[in-house]
Image (cartoon, rainbow, N blue to C red):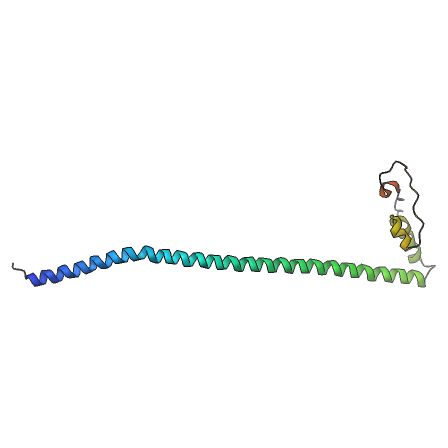
Length: 144
């Protein structure tokens, strides 16, 4: 069978374009992959920066929460102590007053703290004690 040279050249040209397209695709893919990797790396870097910022915000929020809890606890203790002392002043003969004064007398040990309640400093029991805490002997709690 006879073939036309023009037909063969057209087919040849089409196949050459296909080969050329495949070549350019194979060359361009690594470049686009490199571009994709660079974009991915920059995205990852941006996300890591956001994560650091969020972690810092979380850390700051937790610190504020701990600080507020300490402040609330201190305030609660101050209010409760003030109420207890006021009650003791208003009702000096009550069982509560005797109990609170006994607890203060037994458990407030440092001299500077005892001075706040007009209590005399404790006498050291053991002269070989290393600190005033070691020198004080606390009475055992009474059985209830």
